[in-house]
Length: 63
Image (cartoon, rainbow, N blue to C red):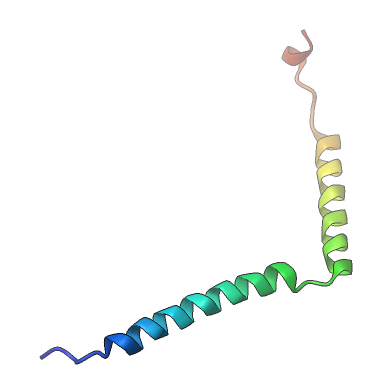
């Protein structure tokens, strides 16, 4: 036979889980210190610059 479920508890548990997921995403987004964000951005810019410097120019584009 099926298990009896309290719908009110299930609804509240689902809301709590969704709220926790949202909080985790916000912690990841807003919880990093400014120095760490700046360092990550600088590393990304350096990697992009290095990659663009290593690209070969396509001769067909020059015509």
